[in-house]
Length: 190
Image 1 (cartoon, helix red, strand yellow):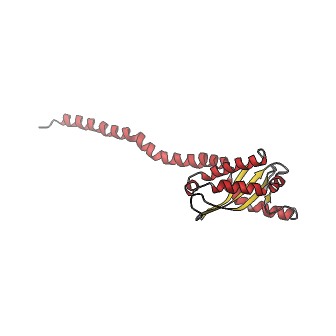
Image 2 (cartoon, one colour; image 1 turned 45 degrees about the horizontal axis):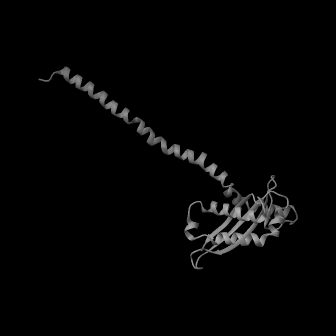
């Protein structure tokens, strides 16, 4: 016959083994539950703000670009042209180069790129310097943009590459670091 004490020992040995199995899996369960929450929090509160700051706050600037234009024409009696906008206290001056239309490289003229950019500087004569060299700057910008292929334009982060290439080319033409920032306000491929 079965010994009742032997059954007790088997039951006591089985209970710690079952509890030890769950305890062994506990770190894995916690990691699987906590990692998505940690990834979301890190992305939302650390990475995205850093990316927006590195990009010069472009999404915010595009959203508020129309407001300073209205303000400058009404508060200063319309003395500023529509291409120039100055709005903040840091003395930044914005000048728009709009509707640059170029053929995309490698498409035999069947595809085109339409782009508008806003140049930002902080010198008092920034607008005059851009206006005096506008034709040259437009030529250099369209030359830079027309060298891009469809595959180049579809790469992630290509807007930042275009922005930095334009900044280099245009500042070289102006003889120094005159342009502080470039915002790409429109970009369409047809």
